[in-house]
Length: 112
Length: 461
Image 1 (cartoon, each protein chain N blue to C red):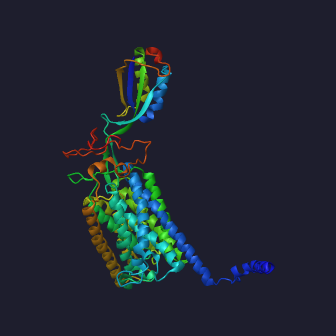
Image 2: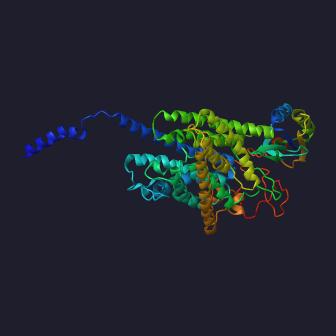
Image 3: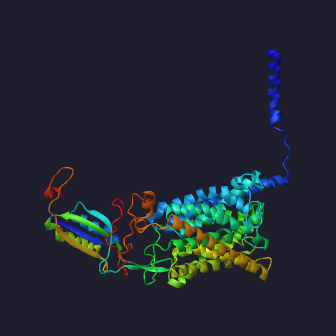
């Protein structure tokens, strides 16, 4: 099992979700985050003073999938999340050691 | 015997109504006008009371979420404490029979020179004006002032500082008289008496209490601390604008056609003020600044308050436009000299109050007169001197006795938690990511670190 975490632009969420669910992935967790990479922040104006906003709003998606699905999911996220502009985000793949369904206590692949 | 008593009682019962209801005498026109004056003055007073909500929303909107409960408490209590102080002491000082500098009777609304209903109506109108001056201060010292210190100086502002100056300019409105009005000082609804008093006291407070942590860098750069809710701030400005229709036209305390021109000048000045501030920031920064434009509308309103009854509509537009431009430069100026004013109270009320007072002389429809200008300047100067001296003394005393400023830990944790063990938004995360957290090593430290001061209690997120 692998956990895929990706940071994407907030307005790309629907596109990414559609791409992933088309692949038969049945669950994901989404959170609102702030961050930056190479995309610097931007300048805002408040009462005559400019200030730098370094952290930009992003959306983080977390999905746990069987190992053989990882490449497809990555491809789906790339298609759904790419705009070509700086700040599109990143995908991280981690090992997931165990998955348990709380309602039934199932473990492993059945719990995915 | 019994029968006689019964008959007597019956007769009395039949006749009783005629004792209670005297013959209907038709009201005179004077009586109707008098009643109208009561109604208008009191309705106007209620509108001015609504400005308390306006101030509360402006101040909450322009400050951070972690201090929202505290700023609302300060706004609620400066009216509550102030009203009691004005009832007990202030009203008598302002409108009692005068000794030349302040009134000497009418305290606790007992045994004043003008008791009876008009005294009550007039008190109601005046207390909301006093409260307006008092509540201006909370914006200038927001986010770092201890609550108990604030309560104490609210009392003294409403009991002493505001009423004594007020007696100089407005005492004769009831049974006092003042040296300033004796000179011919024009301040119809209070650009100086209310707004400059509040603004300069806010300046004194901001000087004594010092800037918020992180507001100014060592190199002298201004670091914006954005307000947490611009919609609330805008709501506040609209409420204030609405309430101003009681503030200015209500100051006639007479229900007659003179209130019409005043409503017009008030409207035009507010609109012009907003436009002036908006265009200036648009030209200066390439984008129109929302906060400054909101301040601009208020600046226009303050600017017209002195002359609303004696200037033409065209003059009102000019006065408002200049106020809108003036307030922007004033905000930038006070930041430059490191006086931290989170909502622009000093600039909107102090500076534009002075401008409005001068403008009432410059644009007087009775004709331009250097003597009038001189008197206006005397009033502006007297107000500044009185408020700065009295304000600095009062705040410094409070600071020495109980301390005015919250501690660094209290300020960083947020006054909601420190002063009230409260949270304005329990369902939401109220930490601004990217918030400045001072280390010992200064520098440009703009980024938030995970570190928080170790003395912040664990419950506070």
